[in-house]
Length: 542
Image 1 (cartoon, helix red, strand yellow):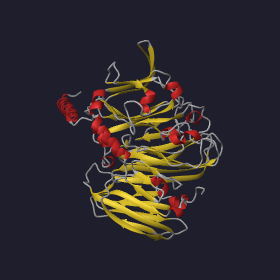
Image 2 (tube, one colour; image 1 turned 60 degrees about the vertical axis):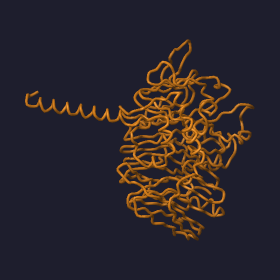
Image 3 (tube, one colour; image 1 turned 180 degrees about the vertical axis):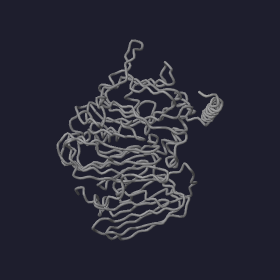
Image 4 (cartoon, helix red, strand yellow; image 1 turned 90 degrees about the vertical axis):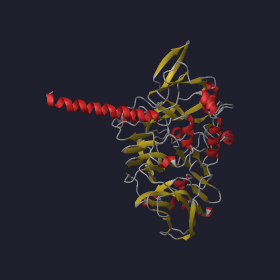
């Protein structure tokens, strides 16, 4: 190297090293990410509308079929042996431990799904080792842990099935239940996390955050969990009473809305945020009003929301009650959204009748001031529908593709199935920031939505929900089924892009209907491939 380049390069490398060290120290000195701070974030409705700080990526460890070589190879891409996969076996104290997750760097487990087989698994253990310790931070029987019967209580751990409906679940031997269990207790770790089971792993899907190197994390300890009792109790109370949201200052419009007409409200000049959006329908207009009436919204001059009432509020094609963290539908026709929707200067919300008959509607919007800054994001809700959709050959059905910087925070899927056979073997495949192979690939549609083996008839929780479906029992899936997943801590940040696909993997060769509402936040300028789809509103069967 010529001598006259040496000194400037040396100076450059010194400055770069100093800057990196300064940034590392700044992150290390920042307030620590702790169990209690994560619980606070979980119930902070404003947090989801801001770019994450500290920044993280959302990852997934699952038992997906490892013979899948990629979307360019259709011969393997729809393989379905998505169980009994693990990283390695470790021998400890005369026992085998099957490692199902092994991650280095600062992070946090945010969601864990596993199906339950009580008669086989009630005495098997899960062990969670943090930061290289040989002693697990958590060492318990995993059946009680993940179903809310051990130290983690509902709603942070629960069984995703309506217990009252258990007798109608056809095909189960007496005393044996197979259903999904979900763990949402955040488990932070500073340097590493390893999860093992002492039985053959079966099915599992674990979502976790991977923070940037140097992020200040306080690793989970049982002593800290016990000390956080007040915070845990408060968070549980808030999650179990999601209707207790800040309404803000309200504006209302209502009346008979003719075909092609709308009720529209111009929001107060910003910066402000929509806190509640409520639509009242006449239940006698259902189910058609749920499909043909569309929520539309624009913020700061950018179209952001175009989604029919059914998927926007989580009830799908039927007027059945549902309640999760962000939506409520009651029998009287009151549909409520608690998504926070900030804007910097201007906003407009409307409900438009795209049907052929007049409907009775009322729109109420509550807003309050918002501090708009370079972390603030606009709320988006989009919709995609297809019918008929052939189940052969198997295919990946795209929910949405997003370009921009933001966070994917949930979706609602409505499926019309004309036959009794199960439709939901298909796995989610989520590609983030241009990935060629999805970083999120699961074990089944019902697993993505938190239940298992097509068992549930209906359930509600802050995180996942299924309003009453058309048919009953494990062996009959005719008619409509709607399921929702909201990502309170397991949102997926995207720096440049996200593609969300779901496999259409049905046991029968038939024609089905899929409709998906997708929910995401993004900085101004973000776009997607899902604009208004008026031609699809009447496509699904009644």
